[in-house]
Length: 242
Image (cartoon, rainbow, N blue to C red):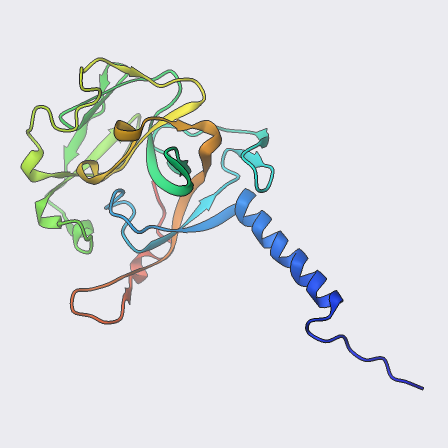
């Protein structure tokens, strides 16, 4: 009696199982949660160059896999949320920024301070303890460290020292009238205010472009000057983002 042979690695049965496994993983990453690598300093010191963060895509609803179509929604981005979204100028690129304005908000930025619906969002000096700047790459000695209170959400902000008092630097809009965030869109800015290309430059984030909310840093590493190998930032592992 002939013995049943086990299917080879490239047998139709195994390839079919592999296909469905890959499809399942892709669906999970598209609609539920996905890791993202941060290569720029625009969100420092909250998110640092070299951080690998996790975006939870069920924060606001569930989208049909491989589309921007929402099947069901149970929430919307709020002031202070850190969101991952498709870059409006090139949707093939993902950006990470902080939500500053939601639909209907009136926004004005003067001398790097945000006025939201006519109310100044206050910033407090935090230069008495600059330890969070120790391993950032964007010229920490040239930064002023602040904590901004955005509608009750307190978070880090850094500003360049040499332009802090410039009367017209990074004002928005240039005519200093208020900008009204349209329905179905968001106004997003980076925490590294003077080194961030954001809604002040390229406009609003369409609601359909929002992929999810950044929750925490999975792991992180940095390249030190003169070192061939990067080093891990173990204190960033599991670091919660707010």
